[in-house]
Amino acid sequence: MIAQNFEYETPSTLEEALELLADGAKALAGGMSLIPLMKLRLAVPERVVDLRRVPGLNSIRVAEGQLHIGAMVTHYELESTPLVRRSSPLLAAAAASIGDVQVRNLGTLGGSIAHADPAADYPAALQALEAVIRIAGKGGERAVSAAEFFVDTFTTALEPGELVVEVSVPVEAAGTGVRYEKCEQLASGFALVGVAARVAKKGGKVSMARVGVTGLAGSSYRAKNVEALLEGTTGSAQDVTRAAAAVAEGKEANSDIHASADYRAHLARVYTARALRAALGTAG
Image: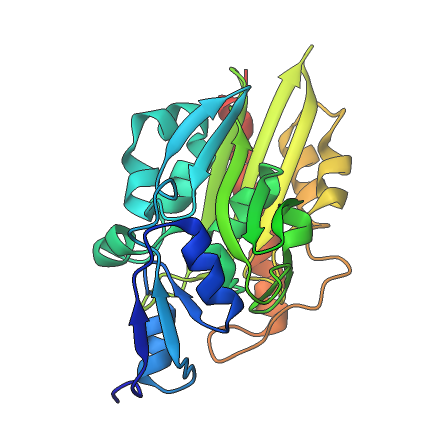
């Protein structure tokens, strides 16, 4: 199908873009989600605001121990930029696992997380990294944690007229082990279940564990119960298995043509164990 007629705007400043968004326009970043929806007429915006000319939205920088990534940075830039690979190997790994080459060259970090597909890869990594998302609107800017940002299926903390402008994650400490593991739907590359793990060890015991999960439920989440079960242990195979077994507890697993709820819960336990074992193998 062909999208219905719409007005196309290319603002050259953030202020201009926010003015248009406040008037009901729809933001266009990479277009990997919006354009297919428009072609199917599931989205019918009267005005589309292309963000490619807005300065500052494609920057990557490190400041005060944080890696700051502009919303218009592409998946390919995240997976291939040496600064990202050094500072946040987990985020680079998540970016490298997205879709195919064409999608990674056009799709953007901000566009992906604003769309909030429950099977997207970034949310798992951002939950494990305890990321902070900077949001701008006509009324000013605010920052929210990843845990607050991802609310439900295709639902975020963004208010009408607001825009994701930047994501910040901690520069990874030396010795921290990280891993992103997913079982993907082969035709789309989306995660049936994806698990991001960060672990650190001190004195032979797990001193820090962070686990982010995507694909299992209506929204990504941090598996704090898994973290609590693993921290303070030696990180043995038995410790990992026991902790991973709790990953789906209290969650209503998705069920669709690709996987039943029970199978997704099983996958979550399997891939959590895999991610934790791999992360522990490089920790320290």
